[in-house]
Image 1 (spheres, rainbow, N blue to C red):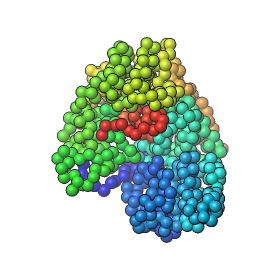
Image 2: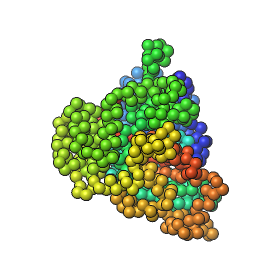
Image 3: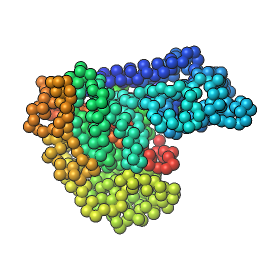
Image 4: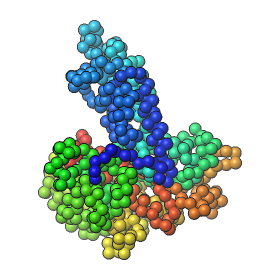
Length: 617
């Protein structure tokens, strides 16, 4: 793939046009930068810097045009440090300092520390070493501080600034960067730790942001007539979204409009299995092998170019991946065993080379077989032996954890006979610092001890929802008709739940759903003649149910918003696109997720302290 100027997707070809979301966010960003005149410094929270690149491919040029002469990232470094002041322009010579950061306690404490430390030397001489509000006032004389919290300010961060004595020295505002469009059909809240926060820490912040985003989408595209969902987090988001809508009623025009016909909310806790399975679509494999962050993957020159890379291209950087490239759009959702047969992949050699190298390894295919055995319920002893072998040879610890979690989720917990020994061997192989990791995973429900009778639960789910299809099935040919081809025989549980919701609803599968965490709901939002919105339980025979479906009449596809709480994988998105492509479905999906994840990124969020990725590039 030739290196060209990065291009973002137009966001006009999806189920609903998303360009306005990006336009509004970019305007907010420019307004924030322009809130201070002249030359200014911008300090970004690294956690949101990637999201900002989705607003404008030429972000650096945009900042320069609007007077940013110093662009820094929030870290524990004093503003008078030589690294910030050794070259022109010096930070010390720039008066306005603008922070854009997520509204977390850690960020608030770090910003307060920088403000107080900005003039610690002068304050020490004039105030006897005091670093209180007087020091902050002195700092303000050198710099003019403002912070814009993403996506909104909170009482907690304001309390930190007040306790640190800098509240009066910092102008505060908000940057409502909640919805980040990644593709024509994908929106992300970019909340990396949402699943951990919900399952381990009991922090519902991500659910509040998801509910706010759902309300925002209804304000833009109209009332969504039908709300379906499964799982504890899904129910919490639905309740919050309905309450928000009642407290801030939709404008009459928005209430009457209906661009999105249905929303299905799913909790990652309902399907922790799918992220643990290795993705084999072209895009999914890129994410597994090199990682895709904020729509970009590390750029790897082909062997032909490797010798000239330094002179012709400089150091390897990153490649922007999205539907603006027609070749990538064509292959992204196809399994590797289909894409590998196409000579057109030469156009994508920068991406295909590292993927092809992994796919050729016997270790890769051994792992796929081990995963398939676990999903199909084959001999547990053989699966345990494979996992033990991986530990003994020092395989990637996160990959071993994925197998352990997959074993736990499909076998009703770690087998009683091997549970203790598997834990002990993992700690012996990778260090006892992972004792906390194992404890975190157990508390989150990903790595459970053996539970009597629980093994039969996944077996029931597998049969009732057709989660595993025989590999020799004609459906797995070059012209598949079932989503199971996305994982070469495994149909993601999450996608099967979406199919059930769109089919006969939850009723026909209610007995099976009882095996999964949390309850399910099916609610109609009905616009009354008075202009008020009423919430009613869905009944297949009710006239209101027919009214809710009328928007998708006349042959127009039904627009379904899937809200995936806790993260979604690229391969699950590919499966949804496959469902949309089937003429019998007459549906188009828009995805809203807290974050695009894979098994590695999901499990790394449970490692304390956060470990550096051990992914093989």
